[in-house]
Amino acid sequence: MNSIGTNKEEFFINVKDFKLHVNLFGKKTNKPTVVMEAGYGDYSEVWKEIAPEIAKITQVVLYDRAGLGKSEKSSNQRTSDQMVNELKELLTNMEIDPPYILVGHSFGGVNMRLYATEYPNEVNGLVLIDSTHEDYRDRFLPTMSVEFQDAYKKQFIYEGNYDEFMFSLELVKEKRSKLDVPLVVISAGKKAHYSTHSQELWNEMQQELLSISSKGEFIIAKNSAHYIQNDEPMVVIDAIKRLLV
Image (cartoon, rainbow, N blue to C red; front, top):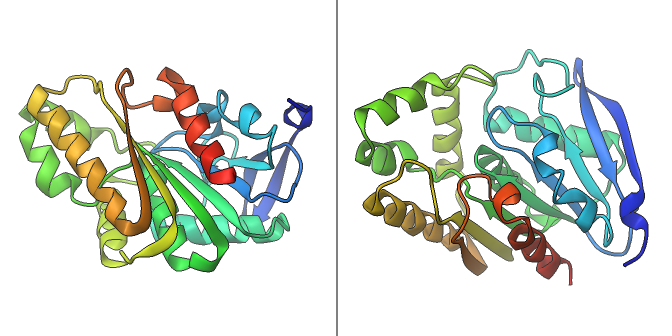
Protein backbone atom coordinates (compact mmCIF):
# COMPACT_ATOMS: atom_id res chain seq x y z
CA MET A 1 0.00 0.00 0.00
CA ASN A 2 1.21 3.51 -0.71
CA SER A 3 0.85 6.51 1.57
CA ILE A 4 -1.79 8.46 -0.34
CA GLY A 5 -4.39 7.65 2.30
CA THR A 6 -2.45 9.58 4.96
CA ASN A 7 -3.27 12.87 3.20
CA LYS A 8 -6.35 14.64 4.50
CA GLU A 9 -7.49 18.23 4.15
CA GLU A 10 -10.40 19.86 5.97
CA PHE A 11 -11.89 23.15 4.83
CA PHE A 12 -15.05 25.11 3.95
CA ILE A 13 -16.32 25.92 0.47
CA ASN A 14 -18.78 28.67 -0.42
CA VAL A 15 -21.90 27.36 -2.12
CA LYS A 16 -24.66 29.84 -2.90
CA ASP A 17 -25.12 31.86 0.32
CA PHE A 18 -23.60 29.40 2.79
CA LYS A 19 -20.50 27.32 3.47
CA LEU A 20 -20.18 23.55 3.25
CA HIS A 21 -17.68 21.62 5.33
CA VAL A 22 -15.44 19.27 3.31
CA ASN A 23 -12.95 16.52 4.11
CA LEU A 24 -10.71 15.73 1.16
CA PHE A 25 -8.74 12.49 1.42
CA GLY A 26 -5.87 11.39 -0.79
CA LYS A 27 -4.64 12.95 -4.00
CA LYS A 28 -5.95 13.06 -7.55
CA THR A 29 -4.81 10.08 -9.60
CA ASN A 30 -5.69 8.74 -13.04
CA LYS A 31 -8.73 7.09 -11.50
CA PRO A 32 -12.12 8.73 -10.88
CA THR A 33 -12.64 10.77 -7.72
CA VAL A 34 -14.93 9.04 -5.22
CA VAL A 35 -17.70 11.24 -3.78
CA MET A 36 -19.57 9.93 -0.72
CA GLU A 37 -23.01 11.01 0.46
CA ALA A 38 -24.33 10.17 3.94
CA GLY A 39 -27.90 9.25 4.86
CA TYR A 40 -30.67 11.43 6.26
CA GLY A 41 -29.46 13.55 9.18
CA ASP A 42 -25.95 12.06 8.95
CA TYR A 43 -22.71 13.72 7.93
CA SER A 44 -19.21 12.82 6.75
CA GLU A 45 -18.24 11.07 9.98
CA VAL A 46 -20.15 7.96 8.88
CA TRP A 47 -17.43 7.27 6.28
CA LYS A 48 -14.49 7.19 8.74
CA GLU A 49 -13.90 3.46 8.14
CA ILE A 50 -14.15 3.74 4.37
CA ALA A 51 -12.53 6.96 3.13
CA PRO A 52 -8.93 6.34 4.33
CA GLU A 53 -8.83 2.97 2.57
CA ILE A 54 -10.19 4.26 -0.73
CA ALA A 55 -7.84 7.26 -0.50
CA LYS A 56 -4.93 4.84 -0.91
CA ILE A 57 -6.11 4.49 -4.50
CA THR A 58 -7.67 7.81 -5.44
CA GLN A 59 -9.04 11.11 -4.18
CA VAL A 60 -12.10 10.96 -1.91
CA VAL A 61 -14.55 13.81 -1.24
CA LEU A 62 -16.61 13.77 1.95
CA TYR A 63 -18.86 16.66 2.84
CA ASP A 64 -21.57 17.61 5.29
CA ARG A 65 -24.81 18.61 3.64
CA ALA A 66 -26.19 22.03 4.58
CA GLY A 67 -27.23 22.25 8.22
CA LEU A 68 -25.43 19.04 9.20
CA GLY A 69 -22.06 18.43 10.84
CA LYS A 70 -19.99 21.59 10.52
CA SER A 71 -21.80 22.99 7.46
CA GLU A 72 -23.92 26.12 7.55
CA LYS A 73 -27.65 26.01 6.93
CA SER A 74 -29.17 26.61 3.52
CA SER A 75 -32.26 28.67 2.81
CA ASN A 76 -33.18 26.17 0.08
CA GLN A 77 -35.67 23.37 0.62
CA ARG A 78 -34.14 20.13 1.85
CA THR A 79 -35.09 18.08 -1.18
CA SER A 80 -32.89 15.96 -3.41
CA ASP A 81 -32.95 18.34 -6.37
CA GLN A 82 -31.63 21.17 -4.19
CA MET A 83 -29.00 18.92 -2.60
CA VAL A 84 -27.78 17.67 -5.96
CA ASN A 85 -27.56 21.26 -7.18
CA GLU A 86 -25.51 22.17 -4.11
CA LEU A 87 -23.20 19.18 -4.56
CA LYS A 88 -22.68 20.06 -8.22
CA GLU A 89 -21.71 23.61 -7.25
CA LEU A 90 -19.46 22.31 -4.48
CA LEU A 91 -17.47 20.08 -6.83
CA THR A 92 -17.25 22.87 -9.40
CA ASN A 93 -15.99 25.39 -6.84
CA MET A 94 -13.46 22.85 -5.55
CA GLU A 95 -12.26 22.39 -9.15
CA ILE A 96 -12.64 18.64 -8.85
CA ASP A 97 -13.37 17.50 -12.35
CA PRO A 98 -15.34 14.40 -13.32
CA PRO A 99 -15.51 11.49 -13.76
CA TYR A 100 -16.78 10.48 -10.33
CA ILE A 101 -17.66 7.29 -8.55
CA LEU A 102 -20.73 8.17 -6.46
CA VAL A 103 -21.35 6.37 -3.18
CA GLY A 104 -24.61 6.92 -1.29
CA HIS A 105 -25.97 5.48 1.94
CA SER A 106 -29.70 5.39 2.68
CA PHE A 107 -31.18 8.79 1.65
CA GLY A 108 -27.74 9.66 0.28
CA GLY A 109 -28.35 6.97 -2.31
CA VAL A 110 -31.43 8.84 -3.50
CA ASN A 111 -29.34 11.97 -4.01
CA MET A 112 -26.58 10.09 -5.81
CA ARG A 113 -29.07 8.40 -8.10
CA LEU A 114 -30.50 11.78 -9.01
CA TYR A 115 -27.02 13.22 -9.60
CA ALA A 116 -26.19 10.32 -11.92
CA THR A 117 -29.45 10.87 -13.80
CA GLU A 118 -28.95 14.63 -14.14
CA TYR A 119 -25.24 14.42 -15.04
CA PRO A 120 -24.70 10.99 -16.63
CA ASN A 121 -21.57 12.07 -18.47
CA GLU A 122 -19.85 12.86 -15.17
CA VAL A 123 -20.38 9.49 -13.51
CA ASN A 124 -18.25 6.36 -13.96
CA GLY A 125 -19.93 4.24 -11.31
CA LEU A 126 -22.53 4.17 -8.56
CA VAL A 127 -22.61 2.36 -5.20
CA LEU A 128 -25.92 2.32 -3.30
CA ILE A 129 -25.65 1.20 0.32
CA ASP A 130 -29.00 0.18 1.79
CA SER A 131 -30.46 3.03 -0.24
CA THR A 132 -34.06 4.16 0.18
CA HIS A 133 -36.29 2.70 -2.55
CA GLU A 134 -38.59 5.22 -4.21
CA ASP A 135 -41.64 3.06 -3.34
CA TYR A 136 -40.72 2.80 0.34
CA ARG A 137 -43.82 4.60 1.62
CA ASP A 138 -46.31 2.74 -0.57
CA ARG A 139 -44.88 -0.78 -0.61
CA PHE A 140 -42.67 -1.25 2.42
CA LEU A 141 -43.84 1.00 5.25
CA PRO A 142 -47.36 -0.52 5.39
CA THR A 143 -45.83 -3.94 6.19
CA MET A 144 -44.36 -2.63 9.43
CA SER A 145 -46.07 -2.17 12.79
CA VAL A 146 -48.07 0.96 13.56
CA GLU A 147 -45.44 1.82 16.18
CA PHE A 148 -42.65 1.54 13.61
CA GLN A 149 -44.54 3.70 11.11
CA ASP A 150 -45.22 6.34 13.73
CA ALA A 151 -41.57 6.43 14.85
CA TYR A 152 -40.43 6.59 11.23
CA LYS A 153 -42.53 9.68 10.49
CA LYS A 154 -41.40 11.41 13.69
CA GLN A 155 -37.68 11.11 12.86
CA PHE A 156 -37.77 13.85 10.21
CA ILE A 157 -36.57 16.73 12.37
CA TYR A 158 -32.87 16.89 11.53
CA GLU A 159 -32.79 17.71 7.84
CA GLY A 160 -35.96 18.47 5.99
CA ASN A 161 -39.39 17.25 6.98
CA TYR A 162 -41.35 14.13 6.07
CA ASP A 163 -43.03 15.80 3.08
CA GLU A 164 -39.71 17.00 1.67
CA PHE A 165 -38.27 13.51 2.03
CA MET A 166 -41.22 11.95 0.23
CA PHE A 167 -41.01 14.62 -2.47
CA SER A 168 -37.41 13.48 -3.04
CA LEU A 169 -38.52 9.86 -3.45
CA GLU A 170 -41.19 10.93 -5.94
CA LEU A 171 -38.63 13.04 -7.79
CA VAL A 172 -36.12 10.21 -8.19
CA LYS A 173 -38.97 7.97 -9.36
CA GLU A 174 -40.11 10.56 -11.91
CA LYS A 175 -36.57 11.15 -13.18
CA ARG A 176 -35.67 7.46 -13.27
CA SER A 177 -33.81 6.54 -16.42
CA LYS A 178 -31.47 3.77 -17.55
CA LEU A 179 -27.85 4.48 -16.66
CA ASP A 180 -24.95 3.03 -18.61
CA VAL A 181 -22.51 2.84 -15.70
CA PRO A 182 -21.48 0.04 -13.33
CA LEU A 183 -23.81 -0.12 -10.34
CA VAL A 184 -23.36 -1.99 -7.05
CA VAL A 185 -26.35 -2.30 -4.73
CA ILE A 186 -25.56 -3.45 -1.18
CA SER A 187 -28.48 -4.50 1.00
CA ALA A 188 -28.41 -4.93 4.78
CA GLY A 189 -29.31 -8.54 5.58
CA LYS A 190 -29.86 -8.13 9.31
CA LYS A 191 -32.13 -5.13 9.73
CA ALA A 192 -33.14 -4.21 13.28
CA HIS A 193 -36.80 -4.81 14.21
CA TYR A 194 -37.59 -6.46 10.87
CA SER A 195 -39.66 -9.64 10.62
CA THR A 196 -38.58 -12.37 8.24
CA HIS A 197 -41.16 -11.13 5.73
CA SER A 198 -40.04 -7.49 6.05
CA GLN A 199 -36.38 -8.46 5.63
CA GLU A 200 -37.18 -10.46 2.50
CA LEU A 201 -39.22 -7.60 1.07
CA TRP A 202 -36.43 -5.13 1.84
CA ASN A 203 -33.87 -7.26 0.02
CA GLU A 204 -36.27 -7.76 -2.88
CA MET A 205 -36.81 -4.02 -3.26
CA GLN A 206 -33.08 -3.37 -2.96
CA GLN A 207 -32.44 -5.83 -5.77
CA GLU A 208 -34.98 -3.98 -7.91
CA LEU A 209 -32.66 -0.96 -7.83
CA LEU A 210 -30.36 -2.88 -10.18
CA SER A 211 -32.78 -2.06 -12.98
CA ILE A 212 -31.61 1.56 -13.10
CA SER A 213 -28.38 0.41 -14.76
CA SER A 214 -27.45 -1.97 -17.54
CA LYS A 215 -24.44 -3.13 -15.50
CA GLY A 216 -25.51 -4.11 -12.00
CA GLU A 217 -24.24 -6.21 -9.11
CA PHE A 218 -26.30 -7.09 -6.02
CA ILE A 219 -24.79 -7.91 -2.62
CA ILE A 220 -26.50 -8.82 0.63
CA ALA A 221 -24.36 -7.90 3.66
CA LYS A 222 -25.66 -10.77 5.77
CA ASN A 223 -24.26 -9.57 9.10
CA SER A 224 -25.16 -5.91 8.75
CA ALA A 225 -27.93 -3.68 9.99
CA HIS A 226 -28.59 -0.38 8.19
CA TYR A 227 -25.07 1.04 8.64
CA ILE A 228 -23.21 -1.50 6.53
CA GLN A 229 -20.19 0.81 6.38
CA ASN A 230 -19.82 0.27 10.16
CA ASP A 231 -20.90 -3.37 10.48
CA GLU A 232 -19.06 -4.76 7.44
CA PRO A 233 -16.83 -1.98 6.09
CA MET A 234 -14.84 -4.31 3.84
CA VAL A 235 -17.99 -5.14 1.87
CA VAL A 236 -18.30 -1.45 1.01
CA ILE A 237 -14.57 -0.93 0.46
CA ASP A 238 -14.29 -3.91 -1.87
CA ALA A 239 -17.34 -2.79 -3.87
CA ILE A 240 -15.87 0.66 -4.45
CA LYS A 241 -12.48 -0.79 -5.33
CA ARG A 242 -14.03 -3.00 -7.99
CA LEU A 243 -15.37 0.10 -9.73
CA LEU A 244 -11.93 1.70 -9.62
CA VAL A 245 -10.13 -1.10 -11.42
